[in-house]
Length: 80
Figure: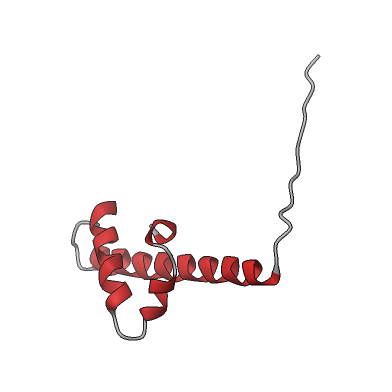
């Protein structure tokens, strides 16, 4: 007989923590979309796709780009 168990967990977060989680998610989504657009542009131009490590180097540039400084508020490990 096979017994299947499931566990469900819920974090009890404060309002500030929920806001920070939302900020993390938004930052990750923005970086993902920017990296995807970059890879698609390279594909259309007939170039090879960038490796994960080269994209991480691009992330450093994006964090310093004017208008994208808000990415500096998120830890780089989360964005990678």
